[in-house]
Image 1 (cartoon, rainbow, N blue to C red):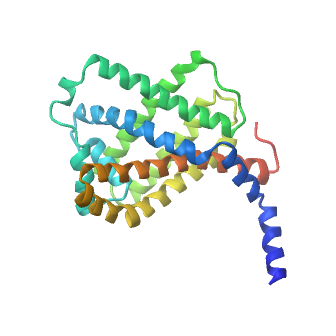
Image 2: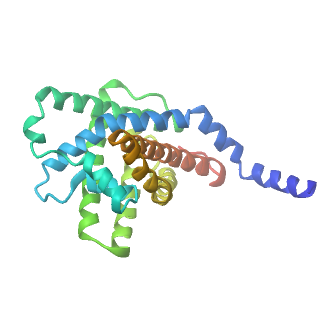
Image 3: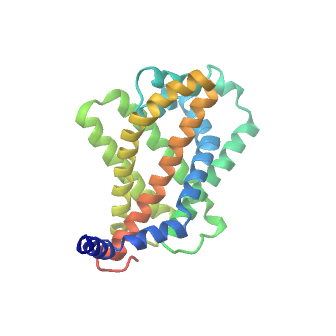
Length: 262
């Protein structure tokens, strides 16, 4: 037994897994995931609902993407779409001040993600005048999620899975490089993008097994508030994967590529 424990410890130490755990604690990974979920619900969700209302194709929009991203079907999918489908007059009732607040908080969301990436790669915070990077990243994120909705309708089977995985990996690969101002080499960022997509696939499976029955139960017990709590929990998982995937990619570069990341 002792020999087994020693071998396990040596293997654990060889993998440098303690370093990965320590880095996650240093950057407050769970705290950042909670912040990601809160900002997503406050800013990204309303923005995507407005975009969905303006969609000339009218194919379900944000509600359809959210239900599919969480791996929901049947009653649970209906419960989510019922509270996230935009009303018919959402565009005409959106005020100028409302649009401005969406833009301000949206940029803050991009800034939060940028700061998380900077902490992961030990880079100093970017100057304030680079806020255009955060705004551009937010626009590209919106476009990426929009095309995911269209893929959900137009493509099926392995073709849809392949396109979703490829576009997702490209977005997170580009997103890290862009928000970090090009200070990190493309090849060092690729493992993190791949790890992020792998984590999102795993989260989707977990959501379909755990969150799907909980949504139905919470909808009956607590109404719309119960459904929103489940969505917030899922968004926390997304934030954990986004930052955790980038952190895993940096750990791979630092300890298993036998070279220092740029």
